[in-house]
Image 1 (cartoon, rainbow, N blue to C red):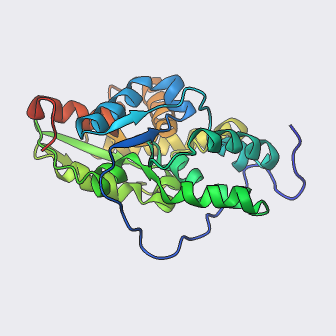
Image 2 (cartoon, rainbow, N blue to C red; image 1 turned 180 degrees about the vertical axis):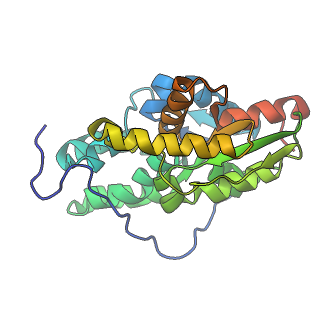
Amino acid sequence: MNRPSSQPANATRVAPPLEGPRVYPARPSDVYLFGTCVLDVFFPSAGMDAIRLLEREGIRVHFPQAQSCCGQPAYTSGYTEEARAVARAQLALFAGEWPLVVPSGSCAGMFRHHYRELFRDEPETLALVEALAERTFELAEFLLEVCKVRLEDGGAPVKVALHTSCSARREMGTHLHGRALLAQLSGVERVDHDHESECCGFGGSFSVRMPDISGAMVRDKAAALKGSGAAEVVSADCGCLLNINGCLEKQGDALRGEHLASFLLRRTSAASRGGAK
């Protein structure tokens, strides 16, 4: 791949703001699901759980088999041309009018915000990008604001710490949607933890390029999670889960993180018996 001279590797990409508050549509009959590459390889059960949550709401889920990566790793590493090629392939797969649901705030932010930057000099493609951005939703956001779910908790009382990736927090407000869904579960007490808004150190290629700094960051994050008194950790981003769980496992700690989709399905399946209320 050719490194562009105008953009250093791992440079911060700031998403241009979208105008005004988001207007949410009525619950659709069909959606696309973008699985993300990290979820597909390391957390496939979370992807299936996301599908089950959506189907439980009476929605048909379509999963184009040719989907791959959203292009974010290349984009944030400065490989703009390569990111554009990956993004173009995804655009062709989600060309219909169904909403695109993404069980990752960072990947949803790539579709909703950064594709506009990638294709700003291609008017025809940009029109497709703008249309896709308007119908792209992070999973928690979609369940909360479009499906209007009302969750009935069937699990034992538990203290839970919520971790949200930095880009998901800034670009998609995923921490707010996650908090709202957890608040519906009567047996779940969400506990705050130090460093909540700080990066876990994953940052895609950052963890590979800067392993010492990344390692220090995730150790701080793991210590804060353990110090919170939480029995479980929940996150809506698999990259963070991969990094945090790896650190906890290396330290010999029993605490583990679980994707929000899996946590919600597990807590509500017994109570709902196949249908959210």
